[in-house]
Picture 1 (cartoon, rainbow, N blue to C red):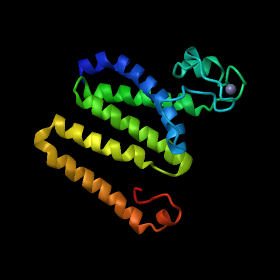
Picture 2 (cartoon, rainbow, N blue to C red):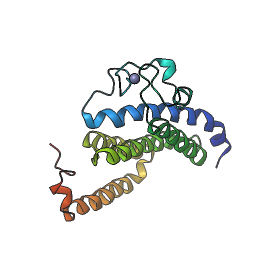
Picture 3 (cartoon, protein in one colour):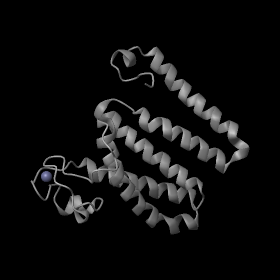
Picture 4 (cartoon, rainbow, N blue to C red):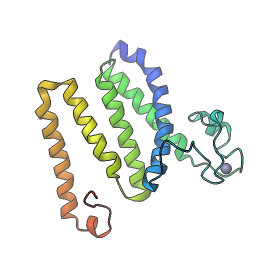
Length: 184
Ligand SMILES: [Zn+2]
């Protein structure tokens, strides 16, 4: 842990809460093949657009008692949970890593992991639309930060990816149930 890590901790946690709020949108929309940019967040029950002051991570959910201001429909505890989880993970990353550029890469990696974890729980898929770009960007950013160790990152990506790919091939159920497919 570093002093600078401590200095960074609070702003990084706040950024984490906001990123977590965005991840809720990603988790809901990406598997449904909806745009993550448009329209703005809506109530899942009545479709009413969420006002900006009702869209403050964790705080709004608590203030409204987990209910939509318009229709009174229940808003899942999942939303503040994903926001808190992202905020806490970013906080820990800042404390451990401090003010190194690596913190950005780590935070992005955490965000991707949280998004695909909850999409996997909901739909039993891990979308290529997230994994493929994230892999390329993560690899490029890691090599840019530590060019001398480029082969370590390539080997780690091939090793981890290859292992999971083998599991997918061996576990026939993955093909039969359509949870794993060739990129189309
Ligand atoms: Zn509503």
